[in-house]
Image 1 (spheres, rainbow, N blue to C red):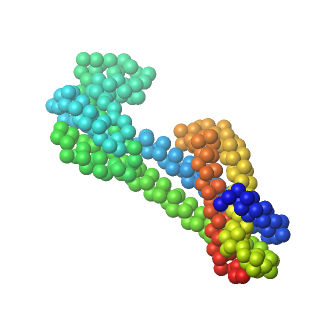
Image 2: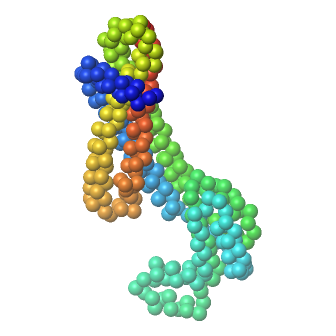
Image 3: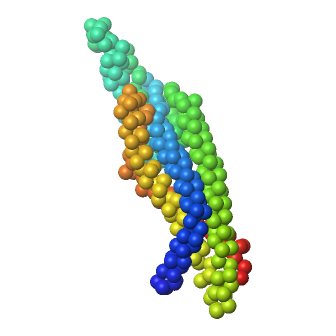
Length: 302
C-alpha cells in the first residue's frame, strides 16, 4: 500500500468515526473495559505463576544415603544430578554440617547439652543431598530416577505440595483463558455493530465509488482502518490505567503486608508492563481488524 492510499484510508476511517461518534465512543468504552479486565487477569495470572514458581523453589527433595557409602560416592551422585536437565540446584550436606544445623535449631540456649556429643556425632550417618527442581511437576520423574540409584536409603519429598502447586497454577490459567475468551467475543461483536452502521450510512457513497472504478480494497479499507483505530484507542486507555493501578497496588500490598513478603512477591512493573502492553495492543488491533474485516465483507454489497 502506497503512502497516499494509506493516508486516504486513515482519513476516511477517522471521518467514519466522526460520523458515528456515539457508537464509536461506546465501542471504545466497552473495548477499554474488556481490555482493562484482560490486563487485570493478565497481571493476576502472571503474578500467581510467579508466586507459585517462588514457592516451588522452596520445595525440595532430600536424599539420605547408606552409612557405609563414602563421601566421594555421594559427591559423584551430586555431580550426576547437577548435570541432569530440570534440576535447578543441588546442595550437599555432610554429617558434620547436619549436626551443626541440628545444634543451632534444637540446642539454642542449652549449648552445654550438645557439648556431651563433642567426640561422637549422633548424626554420623546423616550425610544428604537436597535438590530443587525448575518445574515441580517433574518431581515424580526425578524421584523415580533417584530410587534406581544404589546407595540411597531414603528419599523425603512432598507429593501433595507438588500436585497442589501444579493444579493451582493450571486452574488459574484455565479460568483466565475462559474469561478472556468471553471478553474478546463481546468486543468483536461491538466492533461489528459499529462498522455495520458506518457501512449503512455510506452505502450510496460507496455505490458511486464503485461506478467510477474504485476497487473493493479502496472501498473497504477505510472501514477496516476505522475498526483498528477504535481497537487501538480501546487498548491505550486501559493500559495507562493498568500501569498506574498496578504500581500503586503492589506498593501498597508490599508495605501493608510486609510480614508476608516471602509469599506476596510481585513482578516489578518494569518487567511485566512491556509484555502486557504488547499483548493488549495486539488484542486491540486484532479485535478491530477481525470485527471490521469480516463485517464489512458481509455487510457492504455495492
